Structure formats: C-alpha cells, structure tokens
Image (spheres, rainbow, N blue to C red):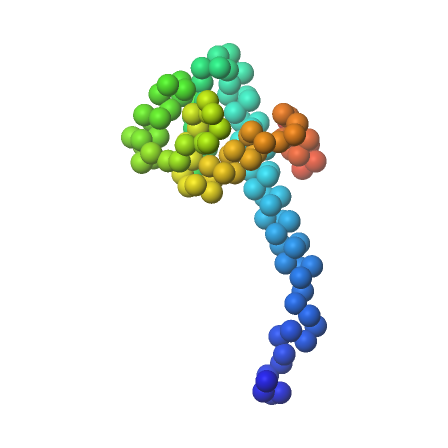
Length: 130
C-alpha cells in the first residue's frame, strides 16, 4: 500500500460500530411496526368489528394514513390503488405489503412475536403512550 495514503484499516474494521448502526436501524423498524400496531388497535377498536376489518399496510407506511377496509375489500383496494402488493404468508391474513421485504417484516412483527402486546412496551420505552 502507498504509505502516502492513510491505511483505512489501521485501527481495525470498527465492527462494533457496524453492529451499533444495525441495532439503530433495527430499532427504527421495530418502532415503526409498534406504531403500526398501536394505530391498528386504535382504529379497530373504534370500528368495534375487529374480525371483519383490517388496516392497509401500504397506506400506513407509504401514504401516512390509517385506512381501514373490510377484509373482503382489502385485496381490491390494494390492486386498484397500490398495484397489488405482496400478500402476507400467514394463513388467514389478508394484509398486502408494497414489497416482499415488507411482507416479511409484517409477518415477523405481527405474527411471530412471543408477546401479543410487545409493541406497547416498546412505545412506552420511547415515551409514547400506548
């Protein structure tokens, strides 16, 4: 290596910093889904028809609005307004997401968490009333 240029790896690879960046990004994603869960719960409690309605994931994350739809109409809404989307792989779930990655995140945060109300704890940690 040319000794006139500084060695970018002289102090190591800063692996710890890479992990801190990843943890921060993961926390932002988790917080976004916690906010989604909160908004979904509030919207469904107003409708008082929890089993028949669903919040549009794409409208929430890409349109900055919480729109509820009858579950039987959500596919039609997503096809007409969002170009279809990717269906959640959970059996019985009608949610569609803009990307396959987002469908995976939806599955993880809404269907695979150990505790149903995990999002309440996370929001409270960030000073947001759940």
